[in-house]
Amino acid sequence: MNTMRPHDEPMIVIKHLVKQFGNLRAVDDVSLTVGRGKVTVIIGPSGSGKSTVLRCINHLETPTSGEIWVDGIHLTHNAKNINAVRAEVGMVFQQFNLFPHLTVLENITLAQRVVRKRSEAEAREIAMQQLTRVGIPEKARAYPSQLSGGQQQRVAIARALAMNPKIMLFDEPTSALDPEMIKEVLDVMLELARSGMTMVVVTHEMGFARNAADEIVFMDHGRIIEQNTPEEFFTNPREERARAFLSQILR
Amino acid sequence: MSLTTGPRQPAAIPLDSTADRSAQGRFVDRLSQWPWWLLIIVFFGVLIVWNVMTSELYSAIFSRLLLGIGITIFTTLVAYGLAIVIGLVAGLGRVSHNPIIFNIATLYVQVIRGVPILVQLLVIAFVIVPIVIDAVNWLGNVLAPLLGAENFLARTQPQDVPFLTRCIIALAIAYGGFQAETFRAGIQSISKGQMEAARSLGMSYLQAMRYVILPQAIRRVLPPLGNDFIAMLKDSSLVSVLGVRDITQEARLYASASFRFLETYTSLAFLYLAMTIVLSLGVKWLENRLNNEGRGQG
Image (cartoon, rainbow over all chains, first blue to last red; front, side, top):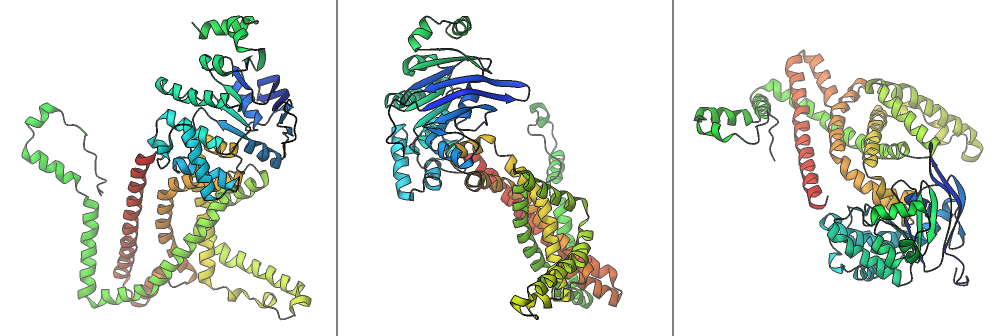
């Protein structure tokens, strides 16, 4: 339905987003635009509201105020609208959140069949393509608990990709992984970024941010402090808080 | 599968004490591990079976009790099946974000859990059912121009609803309240991330429940649901209060006619015990199987 849309129209537009949890203002007047095929990496100290911004984009959190457009669809409280947006937006979680009662293959085919109404055979074929893409087609019959953390996260990525999303959101995808498994997940994400997928990534992996990002967004206390290209941000950050953060992380 | 519920043995015995541990001591240890409770029950079981075979009185009692066994089993199965359906629906209501649905489900659960089952049985049989019949009659009279003055709605009488049916409805409603809480606990034990992952893939709330949450939740609550089945078998004896001829009612009738209270009620108790022990072994087996599966696929 969006094939006629001009290519320079941004994929995600966020205007004056505010999210309040009780007394805590987790996101405080955030405005952000993500272009088509661009990779935006959000970094910042924990509790700075990065994940909450991400979760507002597919409405896992309901914004307190502000507006969000995803691929031209205005995200309102309308449930139909929300499900339509969610089907176009893949999300990868810190804790993988694979369905433990289903095999890897069933994890990837379930939403394809229930939401996309694809046939069993078609869903299976797409699932195997995506599993091959993330490098573990031989695990199709395994249950999630039989996989390593890195493999589980790659299955989670394949599960999201099988829905043919226009956007992929990553919420600290490597934070729950053992160090030796981080690279296999980052490699998949890097490949995805090069293939032209629009991505918004919350991460503490500065190497990935440097290599893959088109834009770095630095947040603190619910606000965007600095928005910059990776080269500029990592070599010559404008803001004092960003500088302090980097000196902590890149010791 | 071990049947022992006896005192637990220390996992490791200190090395120095094994050396001077006497053979007698080890024998006592092993004796303490035996399922004595089961042996005692089996002993009395054998005694009663032997009595049934040799004494005319006991065999008369048992053939009388067995007249009611069909009603007991039928009541248990049907009421339990209905209770599962009611409980699942009410349990989903208890986790609903819709305030109307949540409040209806909570009202039901609170009322049911606050009133003794025996009292519920009386209220449903003698109050609710007649009220519903009145309402049906009224509806029949209203619809008389459409269905004719003598339509089945207008003609239904309270006595058209047998007491067995009333008992089954009452037991199902009572147990549905308890099972609602079991299902609620099961659903809430599944991590929030499962629902979020399903929703982020575009599934609706009900689709996520059906394909992701409930399959995991129900597996988790199978053992408590099994225990509810055992409890239902026992509580089916309440139907005797309304004169439904289950095994308890047959026993009451026989005992009051023959004045053989001791023999009759002992036999009755043993019959229930035999059924519940077999069922509880089944639940235990199920629990073990689920635990082993859990280890296989977490």
